[in-house]
Amino acid sequence: MNRKPLADLDKTAWLRLAGTTVSLGLLVLLLSQQGWEDIAMAVYQVSPWRLALALGLTLLSRLAVVGRWHTLLRAAGLPISFSQSNRLTFAGLFASNFLPTTIGGDVVRLAGALQMRFNTAICAASLVVDRVVGMTGMAMALPFGVARFAAWGAFASLASDAQRAARPLFPWHFLILSPLSGWLETARRKGRRLAKNLVQAISNWAGRPGSLLIALAFSWAHMACLFGSIALLLDGMGEPLSFWIIAGLWSAVYFITLAPVSINGYGVQEISMALIFSRLGSISQESSLSAALLIRTLTMVASLPGAVYLPGIATGKRPKSKSGEPGIESTIPGSPQEGTPHGKP
Image (tube, rainbow, N blue to C red; front, side):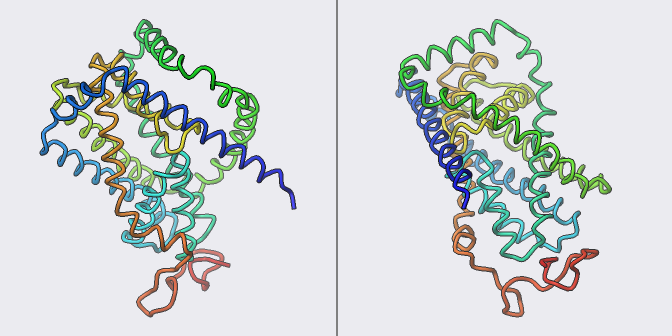
């Protein structure tokens, strides 16, 4: 057996664990520098009704994510119900709280779909396209922050803040930097392979542009709910910020958080939001840190329904159909394996 892939996986896992530790250490350092009392005071300024409404918007954003993936699956010919898409998506969202970035949640979604006996290739391709549609939506929000990003002095100040915050952790920087060159080379190689696979995956939906537009609309709905919840929280702290400025700044935070250096972006997302929103959004660092912590908390709370569905996926238990048999007996219209459950060979 070739042990190299396992060794690479172990190295990546340890690297990501080290990145999570350093990121969380930086976050704690930032919080302590700002003062725990100031952070708590900023949080207490947010009234309960704002928190409840922000949680409601976060839940709606999760449902929009469900709708985006469900649209792609149905367009590809899978006879999946919205209820099934909902269970799989929430299980993935909950699992992503403990797994690297958002890819871990995709693995859970794929595992659940396979247990329901859906076509493996289509499910895997749909996850890739779902990710691309989500990134496309966020990229479309970047121009709203162009005026702020163009302020080079703000970027210089932002870099200075990040360097100053990281200085106390400098003796441990080798945990991240020493294997970085090898990781970058691996990332470039995998990137080329991913681009080839991406073209092949998108071809399944190339003839259905309407479904891609609907999926993109769901992505916009998800983003609108997210930006609205941030606006609610900041306004409650007495530091209102334009919805469109929030859109532009958060999109930058989103792409930074995609870097696979931390489990689910812990620490990275909070630090990025604190520095970007305080320097480029001209709000206090106490408020930006408080908003970052609240957004993380609301997102985790909104993913809790997935805790009900995840154990069934983890144990490999298949949901039963109305006939009482495992799986679902319908087929994929037009599939070459038509006549077998969901196109499974």
